[in-house]
Length: 177
Image (cartoon, rainbow, N blue to C red):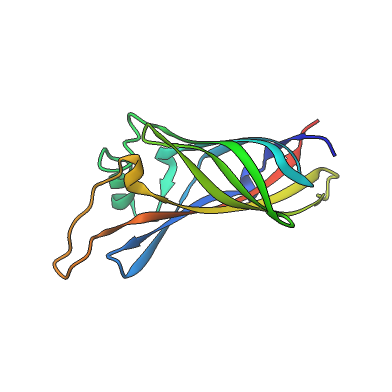
């Protein structure tokens, strides 16, 4: 199959993340607003073109005070850096349906090469006859690499916010004519 344009179905897709809190628990969150441009042959993602953008201000951890702090200059600085982007530069097949997707990730104005594991979850037709594909992706980045260095030392040792941020991405996309 040739490369096809796919439109992300935001109602059936998500961009989620997690981080350690106080080194003993995990805080999870999501970005409510995101978009992607995907051109791919689902049977061979090695030729795929993937561009992902996230509205940094749409961060939601189910805690308004924490969300406000994450949007501030201490973390994402959404006033000056409203968008997080990922542009794939290389896609390598690892196993049947599994790929390493390397690309330029930009957070808070800093761009670094990162690799995420992507899986092709399947292809089918929805009840209205539209061709649909599913992908998942996950990876871990060090927030300090992107200038997100705020932290607080705990009285008991350790820090308030972990350095590693895990991303979990679920994408359902519809074939475009």
